[in-house]
Image (cartoon, rainbow, N blue to C red; front, side, top):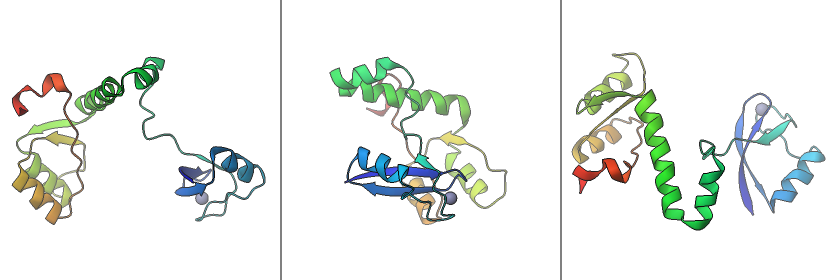
Length: 142
Ligand SMILES: [Zn+2]
């Protein structure tokens, strides 16, 4: 069985389990794959979570050297975060809590937090993710 992330024409996301890739296509053609929310049969596989890998080089890397492909991915994520997230440095926990409690406008932030602060954020129910820094920028963490 394989699980696919699926999405209907109205943008509902859901997960579907199929015997194989072909089984999905067959069931979809026969209108058997429907959205659990709105019953639409216009369902497609949602974009892959790793859709940010654009170049063919990345998939070539994947076959030859999984490690370097992984580093590639984490570098791309890091670059994306670098460009799109506000660096609040060591104020990360403070800023995250402010956003969580609506004191400031929601926005993308990144920063540094200690283990204790992360524990506190979790207890407060703040959603955050940690991303690994690319090796070259990770010198101080060793
Ligand atoms: Zn739907």
